[in-house]
Every structure is written in C-alpha cells, then in structure tokens.
Length: 170
Image (tube, rainbow, N blue to C red):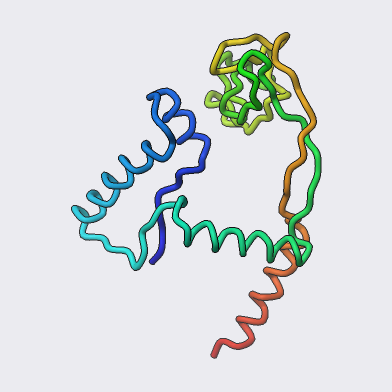
C-alpha cells in the first residue's frame, strides 16, 4: 500500500499561514504524528512518504506530461479572485462571503458548510479576502490560464482499459 502526507493542498497553506510557519514545516510536524498513529494502530505501508520528495515530483511530472501529450489535459481560462491589497491570487478557500443559495454569511469560495453546495468565489455575495478582510469592491476577478483534465475523453479511455482488463480476467 502506498500513501503520503500532502504538502500542497490549500488547507495546509491556510493553516500554516495562520500558524506563521511554512507549509513544509507544517507537514513535517504532522507527518511524524501521522506515522506514529499508524504504528499505534498496527498499520504499515509499503511506502508512506510526502508530496515534496524528489521521487514524487518526478512521478507527478511524468504523469502530467504523459496525459498532456496524449491530449487528456488542456489549457483554458477562468476567472480567479485577486486581492490587490495582498497583491496575490486567492485560492477559493481564501475567499469568504454569503452563499447565493441559502444566505449563509460565512460561506467559503469552494463550498457552503451550511447547505453543502459547492461554490465558486465569483458567485459569493459580499465576497472578501480571508487574509486582509477586503470587501468585494476591492477584490478583483482576473482571467487566469489553467490546465484541466478532459474528463469526457479520459472517461472513454478508462472505460476501454476496464473492458480490456475484464476480458483478460479468468
């Protein structure tokens, strides 16, 4: 079994900034604690590592480039929240405001914890930057370019691989 501690997720970034430490320091602390819990539970892994290792970097780069070269990843543009006060783009969890569906005033740019709907930062009412508290009049929505998985194309390829595997099974 293979798994590991993620040092790239937005929750890690949010919490490490709150604590005033780097994401790497945050993950190193919790990675050790997680390993100790696995040991206490009597669980073992063939490999339990961290996403910042050279091996993880090499494998994910190869995985990404292979998918990109085969046409399963494409570039597209989308609106992203930008805080001119902090001079940075904001991950969706760094944008807070009122849910347009249920009116909950503490919804995040990724979801509303009150009604459970997934959200987009551009949809929030009275959106503000979680870091500095700037209201929507100061937040800007700027076009940014991103990579996206071509899910319909990928679904067809995965379905074909599953059919091939089933045909080989005894």
